[in-house]
Image 1 (cartoon, rainbow, N blue to C red):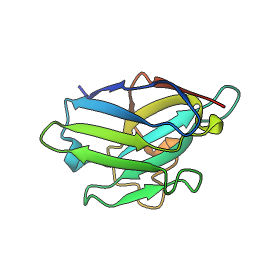
Image 2 (image 1 turned 90 degrees about the vertical axis):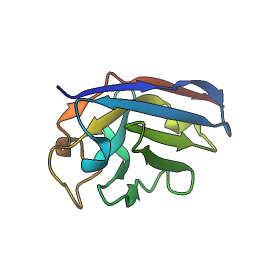
Image 3 (image 1 turned 90 degrees about the horizontal axis):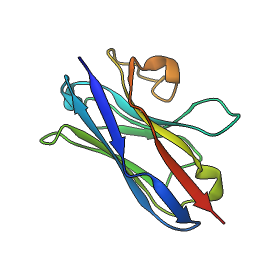
Image 4 (image 1 turned 120 degrees about the horizontal axis):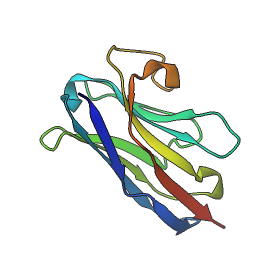
Amino acid sequence: QVQLAESGGGSVQAGGSLRLSCAASGMTASSRYMGWLRQAPGKEREGVAAIRTDGSTIYADSVKGRFTISRDNAKNTLYLQMNDLKPEDTAMYYCAVSLWSPRTRELLQGSYNYWGQGTQVTVSS
């Protein structure tokens, strides 16, 4: 059974940094497309970043140059390094895994089959 457990969220001031982690079990992280998505109150869930099985990455335009997705295969863990955080980054952040290879659709929530419980990120101005 696939399980994903996020951690690392918190409250920071604008310009600060956080690193989110997602520990995966019941699957091999390197063999699946994985992603980070977020949902702010009153808004739809949106893709932030994703990493493919070949290690290539894709980012939403709103976070390019500020966020970095990475994967530690030995620890079976996915990360999201977030720098220069802005108030509009405030949201619940979810880790997700796809059972197929949704190339060109990596930032769509419908591409993912399993989700973590989420971790809250709050950025104050």
